[in-house]
Amino acid sequence: MNALRRSPAGFTLVEIMIVIAIIALISAIAIPNMVKNRQIAQLNACIKNLSTIESAKQVWGVEKGKANGDVPVNSEFIGPDLYIKVMPACPAGGAYTIGAIGANATCTLTSIGHSL
Image 1 (cartoon, one colour):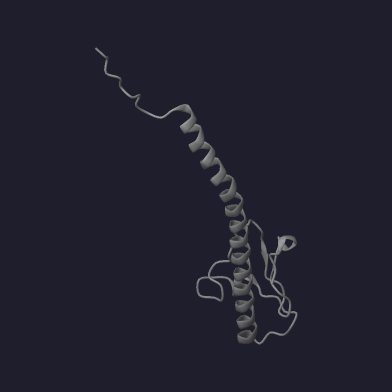
Image 2: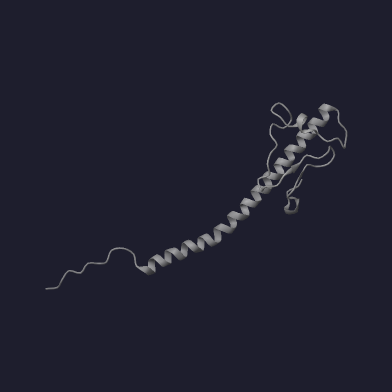
């Protein structure tokens, strides 16, 4: 009599290696794009923050009757009931400088495009 042959259950080593190779290929394509998209999002958020600071500075200047060259004092510019509730933070780790009226607010990361 012929013995009944059972087919082996599970995956072979070659099948598992093919699946791992496909996952590695997809990761090699996706990870650089995610890093680039993250940097672009940080840049856009920083520019938006600079624009918000600049708008608040202009409103402060008009309401207080200030001229070009006047610099806002933090105590009358940043606060719960003032022009900016809380000074925003650059998502890429830079620091903002409000600057004078007539000059744009700046970020310390201007070398990588964080500027108005």
